Image 1 (cartoon, rainbow, N blue to C red):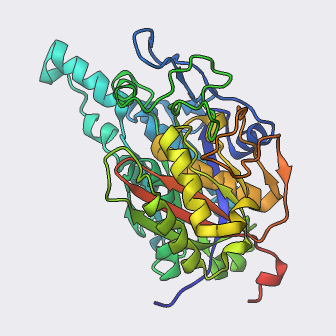
Image 2: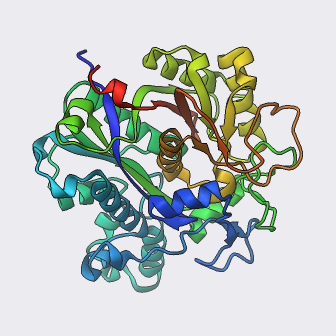
Length: 418
């Protein structure tokens, strides 16, 4: 395979702590908590009562009213985040070959609100009452399709759905496409808007969500008293380009992707392998793909869900992969602030990792009070930290045992002629 270097040139995010990467990043480095009581519906009878909802999103800023009515919230998020990423990259003001530009945007559930509203309408008023745009509103692939149509991008098109690793898989798959030179530009990421009664109640039933009703500390990754994740919603989209293409058009480059790993636990539908086998192998695979020594990794943006099993398994896997160096690594979980964005988490956390590479700043893991002997690493718990490092890693692990890992390194002037 003839491989080509791949860089990140545009970022777009819709999150519970701010819409737009600037607000999102400012929220992260100041430790802003985006978790509060559920407002999308009455959660009084549910086991959990909290969520990380997107609070400042106005679809009309990105989509005309007629089009917005024909989209589920998850697609609206994806369109908005894509528009931000395209503008940030400068692609909106330059010409490029659109047959060599593609889209990979995934989701876990897709049109969750559409599914629930339509079932209620069917039950009450019969099949003739259904919206003619029902199918295009609920399908997981429609976010990717709509972005492709909006920008006329005629290259590779895909919409992975791998639970909580979806966003990382989408970005990793786009990375591979660019490495093979099957495209010059890819928009990649994921979107989720599943804070709806059925989806929320279903995850409550798995008993994996926190029952702590104090929003100030409900999501506390790696803390001894953690009791589950807090569901969130949002989207993250990035513009990836072949390095030569980005340099030719004079693009601003945030960082470079150098490695991607993808493995399966093949163990259980919801629980991670207690030995962290799939997690271990996916990090090893990403490091091998990146062709770097593990000691060159200075920071890991952890999956860190705040569940007892995940945090313990992920910590153990990091120790297996990095050995003594694991204790020198800086680690943080931004789910402490934004909750678990489900399929959108990998993409949004990738953006956070890219910003850490670009700025040298590490967001904190808030709400960490009591150390857990099973989680003995340095989780960046005393506010934002600054660190000079060569490369970082972003982990994503999903229900069903899907694991994805991305390795990102700094890009500097010395790289431009290599």
